Every structure is written in C-alpha cells, then in structure tokens.
Length: 355
Image (cartoon, rainbow, N blue to C red; front, side, top):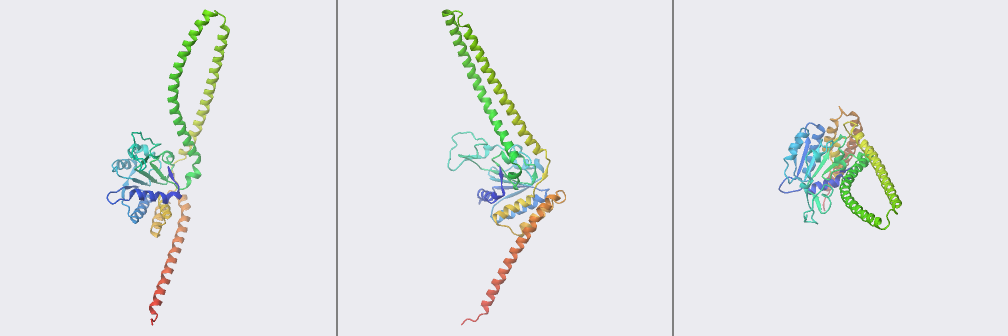
C-alpha cells in the first residue's frame, strides 16, 4: 500500500506506538550506504527518533543481496523496518521471502485464532493483525506495483504522484488481480460442474433409454419425428451456449491484453529518480511539527547530491528549499525579537525602585 503525504504524521504515530519499548529494539532502519541522499535521510530520521526516545538500529546495506542477508537475520520481535534509498523497484514481499502467516496474530478483540488459515487478504482484517510492517522511503522509479497496490505488510511513502499519475496503472493492476482470482474460482467451479454434468448426463441417458423402451413397446415408431425435434433443439441450445462462451473468452482476453499492456508500458518507461529521500523525510518531520534548521540543512545536502545526474529534479526541488530557508529565518528572527523584548522588560523591571 502507499502512504499519502497527508498521512505521514499518522503513520509516524503508529510507528512510534509500536516501537516504544524499555527493553528491546523494535525498529530497524536499512540505509543504502553508497547513496548520500539516503545517508542524510538516515541522519535526519535518527535525530527524530532520538527526540521521541525511540530505540532503533541503523544498518547500512550495499545492494539488494546484502539487504536480504541482513533482513533474514532480524529478530522476530522487530515490529517496524524502514528502508531508505532502496526497496521501491523490487517486489519486496517476494524478494525477501516474507511469509505473511509468520507475522499475523490475533487482534486484541479476537484473542483466539480457532485454527483458521491466514491469507494475505485476511491477515490485516479482524480478527487478525500484523506484528511487523515494512516502510519504504525511496525516490527510485518505477515503483514495483506489488509494493504499491498489492501488499498489506509493505507501505510506501508516496511523494503525492501516485494518485495523480498512476490512476490507470492502479486500475489495470487491480483488474488483473481480480481476473486472476476469478480464474482460480472458475477452475474450481468448472471441476465441480463437470462432475455434476457427468452425473446428470448419466441419469438423463438412463431415463431416455427407459423411455425409449417404453415408447417402443407402446407406440412403436410413432414418436420418431418428436425425437428428431428434441435432438435439434438440444443441439441449437448447446451451440448458442458455446458461442456465448467463446464471445466471453474473447472479451476477457482483450481486457487482459489491454491491462497487461498498461502495466508493461509503465515498467518500460525506464528507471529514474522522482524525488529526494531526504525531502520525503523532511516532509515527514514537517508534518509532525518538529522541523528546525539542522533538518533543513541535511535535506538540502541530500538533495544536492542528485544534481550531477538529475539536475532537472534538483532545479524543481530547489525553490521549495529556498522557501523553507526564508520561513525558518523569519521564525528565528521573530523568536529572537521576542527574546530581546523579554530581556528588556526584565532589565527595566530590575531597575525600578521598590517603595
């Protein structure tokens, strides 16, 4: 699933709630250590977590193989995993061999499982909840759509473009998933229908044989024309049914090809960076209301590291930082003036003569 910028603060509160502990570490951060943007992001996030007294472990990774090896060594008690500068372009649930049943547990309202199996579709619904979440903060694109639309354990911090730019891809993805589920259901139903149809045909054949024997005994050859009409009627009925079935299959195949083409075109656009990880972390901190000049400086350094390979992106983000610098400067000047006024008031009161 994806997290819109307006939901950043709520998501952080959830991470905070499930990570606060007095004994063990429940939060792990994987940061791409060869990426300056990710390093600045990790520093900003570490400062934020310390401010909120959240115990965490910061683990540098070099490539996805290193990420997988270190993820597999995580303690089962880890509640939250945050990926910085990596993870957006691969199907993490599949790549990390995540079994969602291992992270599903009864909710507080329903303490007993009663032996019911856990599936990805039901694991986050009552009476079950997940005891681990994986969050992605990464500007690399294209998104892996399984992370964005198809996973309950993976949550992606969005830059606001998913709703506006990926509506067609989301619709195509959901349609393909729905069609795949329908195919599985149809296979089971067809198997049952075939068995029922075979039994029905056996009964009908037996009944027709008995009726034919009775008719031959009573009427001889008098009903031959009626039998031919029945055969023709049955043949036409089966033919119409087959034609309708073929038409539905053709329509279904056309819909399948159209949606697959939409997904294929999205992935074939090529890889790029759509935003700075440091900017996303800065947006998160800003939503919480904990911003200061140190966070802004780290966000600027992280974004500036992209200028050599992604100058257009840098020039797009630069005005945002200029505005933030002016805003924080104005706030600092206001605070300084207030402090000066307070000091002056205190000084003048000290000089007053008390009678």
